[in-house]
Image (tube, rainbow, N blue to C red; front, side, top):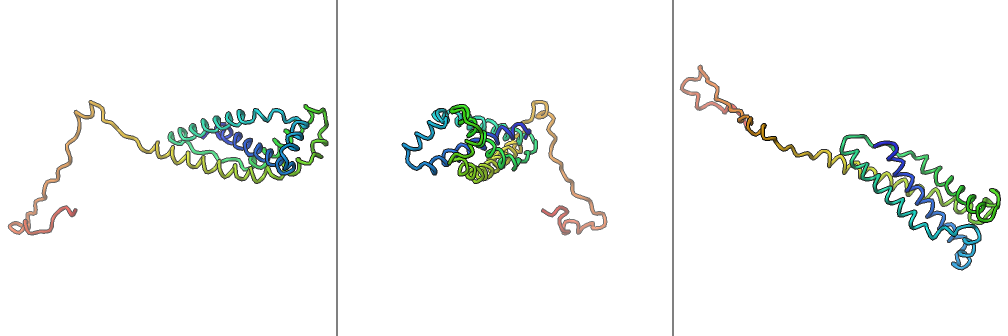
Length: 195
């Protein structure tokens, strides 16, 4: 599998896990839905209503790259290893950058004010378990795609061409060996071919 396809499959899974951890962090810090909604609107999370569309696009990209992985495996191309560091570092960097951009673009605050928010540390801590689940899911899906591709690539039906049908060779015929020394006892000997 080409490296670009591995990244096309990996990045949507990492971002989906990061967003799930992001949402869970806000649910843990603000258990009341009214307080949570107020905090989300104050911190620049108005774009969250478009999150299902973005996640749908991410799933579609991952599905297309998974089909491409099946095709690559069917053609005999080896599967590239998933970079484990991507699952460890990308969610952390994505979450930190997302929080800083949300606050700075919406309220004009600086980096340290985003870090001081009550959801930053829990959100950062939740990134690693979600990244581990995404890593396991990605490895399982890519191994399955590779196995399906190898199965599809290994099952090839060869249809003889018309020219080959005319030139089919007859089956090899084995003639019995003559045993000059056995003479009249030649029919009582053990068989020549043991089946």
